[in-house]
Structure formats: structure tokens, C-alpha cells
Image (cartoon, rainbow over all chains, first blue to last red; front, side):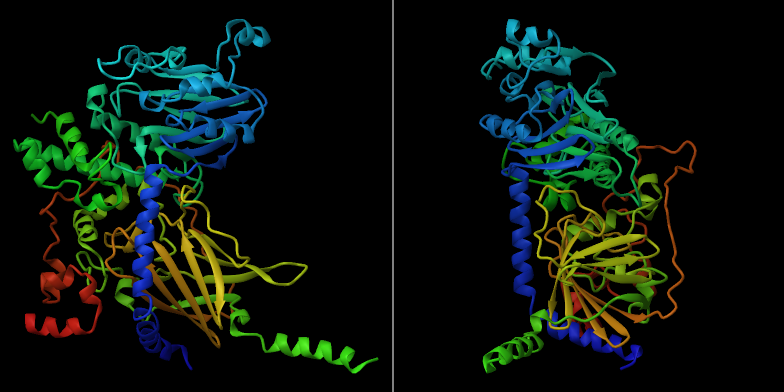
Length: 332
Length: 283
């Protein structure tokens, strides 16, 4: 058989052998893929993944928990949903027996079990006396708007336990911590998912904890009631892109841990940024034409992204996202 | 020495030689060059804009592609984007294959594939290890495990990045599932891939390519791409795209080849020979 005869045979063989056979299997795979995507989206799995350097990612209900370990202790970014803190602390203990020294919140939406995670550690301040004398947990770091909103909860909503409130806040720019031989930067992202968002950059490990400005399970949650805005989300995504340096052919290098969903690198952030920007542009165009919210929703500006990122049920639906984008852009 | 003592090794040897085809394997090692005679217009000059025919894309993918502006590839972070494992065999490349064996058993533990041009390394694990958890990172080449189906190497790959099913804007999602078959014919390999995409395909996408052995495999093309913004004053945050209904290339391809819009917009129907009859009626 010569090479020139192969293409014709190839087509025939492919059609006969594979096209007839795998269709049901492929459909099953597609169904399985959707199930897996939904399971991942709900954050049902608890598992730990070493990212690189000193940084680990714990996948937990309520979102990803980021852990940095070293000789000086443990630094944690974000806390899981109620009921999952014991399991997350157990995962942290598999990584290090050192005390948890810092807990950083990327936004108010990742503070559900601050008290439990903080209490599993102790602050550096006061040394071996401080923890005993003051019975304090790990230092909780967040933008001051997180503290402000946790301290002024709207009537009817659950008031956070005092132990869960941030103990060290910052206003503008970034909070810098040098821990475990590594600069750790909590970088404020104004008016993004909320008005208190930070991304956390582990500069030596080359890992970014993005919080909810980047969610691999859904469209970004733009919480207008808490000061969020779609423009701020896009700015934050572009800042993450600026911080990322791929290792080779747009792959690896800086890793980015989203608020929810799988581990990513710059290319994943890039595709997400493209999507959010395109949807923003479409809604902006319709707002500019004076269209109502109902008209904008009817135009389906998220259409081709819905199968991967959209939802008709749950706490953050596609409709809610479109409405948030519309109102972010001045739609009435 | 009893007869049994002599016959036992003989029986074992016979059983080993006559082992079922599941354990059979062929030697794919070497340097392989692709033959571009099949699907040449798509593979070498590249597909034309608005030519989605033959791809079983769904309506989500179609809308995605219609909004895609080629300028997007000029954004600095897109400049070094390479093909995924599900597409890379379509591109210009040389394929080098080698084996990794357990030194104690000489069983193949992995098959390595290096595709030049894009400097992509793919490891096909043959040791039965599981795929990573859902939350692991995705890569261009994904995570691959292989097995022998008789003399065919069948590879299953997951954890592949978002890319394209055709490089004119038809997206492939980050949830694709890829099965490759490598079939050796003397000094040629037929590669057949079956891609399922729960987000952007209605049916599996089946493609094939052929390789011939390169007996002078010294040329190796390296491409250490580093992106850069070469447009001073350009808006860093701008993403080129077409608003719905404003794609300026809507009629270019179909007019050139006198095809109906339905045909060029693709979909599963356009994969099958029956569609030729429909085209004739449409004319």
C-alpha cells in the first residue's frame, strides 16, 4: 500500500468503523461531560491540588480555598461554606502542621467560615503568649469595605459572628505581606464583583488567587447591591492578564485559582475576559439604543456562552447576570 | 527430569506468543511527516471565513463563530496560542514518537509524541493510571492515556484547553473529550480522531490524517513564541468582535462557491453524503 492510497481508505474506514459505532457512546460522553461540569460547578468535591511553589488549592463547597505553607506557618485565602470548615482544616493539616497565621478574604462572599478557620490558627503578634493571653485566631485580612459590609448587615440578614470579622483591613492599593519567604500581595479591585474585592498574588510561587472576579463555573457574579459593576470585573480580569506570564506557547507559567471551578492559567483568563467584554459590548450597544431590560434579555446577548457558563436556576442565573450588566452600564 | 518439568515452560511460552490481541502492539517510534493531500485547502492555506461546512457544530458554536473577528488573534495574549490535541494534526508539523519502558519489565509505560512547529509534547500514559480530577488545570495537549486495540493505539484525552474545531472561529470548549486511533501501515500511519464537545458540537467530529516515515529526521523547527503589543496607543482592553448581524464576511465564501447560506453555516447534516443532493436541489 502506498501512502497515496491511504487517504481514500482512511475516509471509508473512518466512516464505517467510527461514525456508525460511537454515536451513542459519544452522546453518553456528552451527558457525562455535562454532569461533570454541573458537579464541578456546585463545588461538591473536596480535594487538594498542589499548584506550584508553596501554594495549594482546596476545592470545597462554597468555593476554592487557597493555602500557602512554609516554615513560618500557613496562610489561607478564603473560607468554604458553612459545614465544610472541618473538612478544609483537615486538608490543611495534611499539608502542614504549622499554625495558620493569616486568613485573607478576596470578598465578603468568601467569609462564611472565617471564625472556624481563624480559630484553627493563631496570630503572629504576641508570640507564644498572645494566643494564650488573648485567645485570638489567625489574623483576618480584607479590604475595609468587607469589614464595613459585614458590620452593617441589612435588616433581616444573618449577622456575622464577631470572630469572623477582618482584623486587619486596607483601603486603597494593596496590602503587602512577606510570609514564608514570599511576597504576598492582596490587591484591591474597585467596584468589581463587589466594592471590596481583592486578588491575592503569590509573587514567588507565581500564583494568583482571583476570588469571584473570575469564576470558572459561571458568568461573573456582579453584585450591584454590594457595589459591584461589570466594568470593574473587566478591569480586574485585565489586571490578572497583566500579572500573568505564560511559560511556553500561552500555557503554564503563572497559575490562576478562580473563586470557583478548576485551576487555570492565562489562556483561560483570556477567554473568560474576551467573553465578558463581548457581552458587555453587546449590552452597551443595546443600552445606547435605548432598549429596555426586557428587550436586552430578549436579544440574548450571552447566547453562545450559555451552555458553558449560564444557568436558569440557582443563586446566579443568566438573567441575573444580564440584568447586572445592563444596570452597570446605566440601563434603566 | 519429569516430562511435566519440560512441558510447563513450553505451555507458558505458547500461551504468551498466542496472547489475545489486547496485548498486541506495534512500534510507532520514529519521525513522521504529514501528508496534506487530504483536506488541503483547510490545512495549508487555511479555511476561508464563514466556511463552517462539514463541521457538526451546534447553534451556540455558529453564533460564537459569527461574532469572531480574525483581529482577535492579534491581541497580545492570543498571539502564541497553539492548536489543541484535537486539532494539531491538521497543522504543519513533524511528529516524533518514542517509547518509555519500565527498565525491569520492559513494558511500555508511556508513549511520547512531539509535534514540531508548536513545540508541543504529549505524553500518552500506558500504565493504567487514572485521569486527573476535574479541577486540575487544562493544557493544549491535555492528559492522555492509551491502550492497544489489536495493532491500533487508541488514546483517550481529557483536560484540553478551549481552542477551535476549525481555525476560522469555530470554537472548541474546554470540556471536549478526544479519542485518537493510530494505525500503522508499513511506513505510514493513519491517524483518526473522534472529538465530542458537549458545549459546541451536536455530533462527534471525526477527522483523519496520514503520516509517512521520515528517514532523514534531522530538521526540527522551534517556535519559542513571546507575545508583544506592536500597536502603540491601542486599547489594551478592547476585544475585536462583530456585533450580532454585523459580520462583514457573511456572503464572501458562499458567493465565491455559489453555495446556500445554510450549507456554509455547517451543522451535522453537512457532514453526510446525502447533503450533496440537498445542495443540488437548492441550486
